[in-house]
Image (cartoon, rainbow, N blue to C red):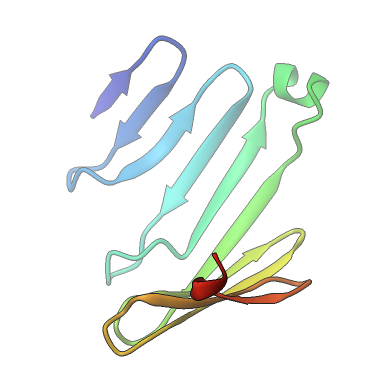
Length: 104
């Protein structure tokens, strides 16, 4: 299924999940595993995007047994997420610091 807004084209699979996003700057692809989780996404810049300084990028994601996001691996480093027993985000760890949600 394709939907369009003024500047972006979205493509969804039969389950309604976003699988691609196109605009004049980039094309992004999203894949899902059997647990309906997003293990990775990729961004490819268009010619216009490259002229604007947008680069190719692949992101990877990891989840715990409850399906909560625990890691986001980016070209700039890894983000870590920790949760309390009620699945509330309690800690965000970046390459530079560890922050508790109460710090926000």
